[in-house]
Image (cartoon, rainbow, N blue to C red; front, side, top):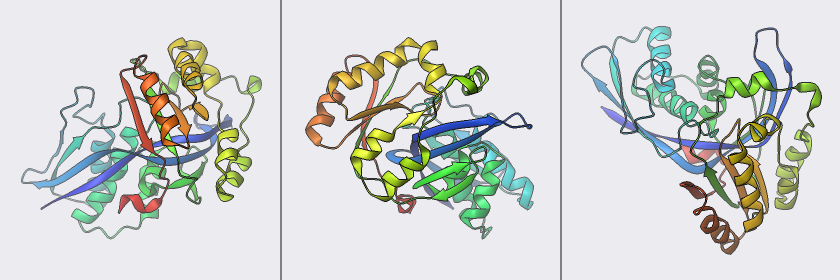
Length: 289
């Protein structure tokens, strides 16, 4: 028996860091939403009681470093599953890009194995398990649009944001999320207006969403990686309505309401960046169905 699960990317419309917690994690407030760029996960039972990761992408680990592997291992351990599974990952989301590709793969694996192994767990229960794997996994279990608090595991669902184009551009460099958080100077940064972004989404106001974008991690990543700052500048020059780095980077996204502007930004960026995508902002929880 085998089944497929969709694992969509996310972007951060707002990302704030409030303080460092005693457990070493940071207390965050993030508004995340899914976009129409997705990995595809194929889960298939195998005879041997082992977890097998298959991918044609050389940057995707095929062992316990892979978050999808960790998701399968967690379910096997927690629920005493003595069955093997093959996890084939068709990678469309850039790796180490600030788009939660690995977290979304793990979330899709949790959802898929819940069905394959007939565990009967709710999405809330899967999201709790996801929090043990990584900070973005809980959100990715649900998809859609949400406010994430704590270290990312406390999820409050939000309405679908205004429909628009999202142009994603990833430079050919990797950014260590742990390193970015380590360098963050909490006393010296300006914080995004998270409640204001929630209101903008609830009002379905594209203009207010554009005006409210904010990510405190830019204060670390942009000075460290001038290429990321350059892509932000180029996106603005080519006419994106609003521009922001996603997560800890290095991917930058620009919003465009109209097809013609999206095309202009997309075409312009192709000269600066190999990995450029024009996708729709979906943000609807039902896209996982």
